[in-house]
Amino acid sequence: MRHPVTPRQRRWAALAAVLLGAAAVLVMLAVQQSAPTEDRAAPAPVAPGSVPPSTASAAPTPPSANTTPAGPPARPEHLSIPSIGVATDLIRLGLNKDRTVEVPENPARAGWFDQGPVPGQLGSSVVLGHVDSVDGPAVFHDLAQLEPGSTVEVSLVGGSVATFRVDRVATYANEDFPAQEVYAGDPARRALNLVTCGGEYDAARGGWQSNVVVFTTLVSTA
Image 1: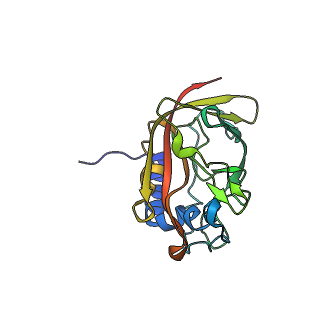
Image 2 (image 1 turned 90 degrees about the vertical axis):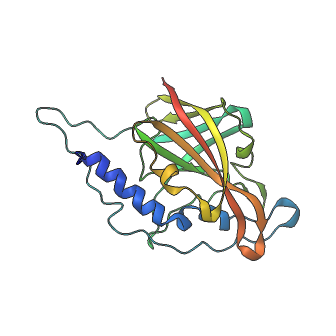
């Protein structure tokens, strides 16, 4: 049985396939962190990896006939998580020249992966941040302490605020990182997934050995 596939579905299916194949790249936060506070060390090098050129150039869904094309959605500019004291401006994260995924240079700021949807749109938006640095705790140091029901707020350019509810918090070994679920989950949901490092720190193996993912769902936009 064949099912029609819309341009939007094709776009996200392609992105999902690439992200799944490049899982090692998407979890490279784990090797850019410093040692824990009590055993400081210089950040380890970025994990190698590449993303096929077709990923970032997927064509947008064309407007329907007799309609006025909508402008681009407002980008996210600030994220707050009141229960763990997070308040950070958001930078945009895309792809490096070698087509590896960017991560924030400033450990005090988180970044939105701009190849995915804007928070509040259909699909899975992703925000990444460091857990620590050579100077101490970083922006997502306490992310693993979040509990289901906690709220996450994203302020968009233009003044609107999207509020999300935490559904669950999970820790995955780097080699088991669920890239497709995190970056291209249910296209019918308006999700925001937060990613940082966690688990055991092993300098000999390149840094943090796991990733913490907080899965959230949109509850309101004001």
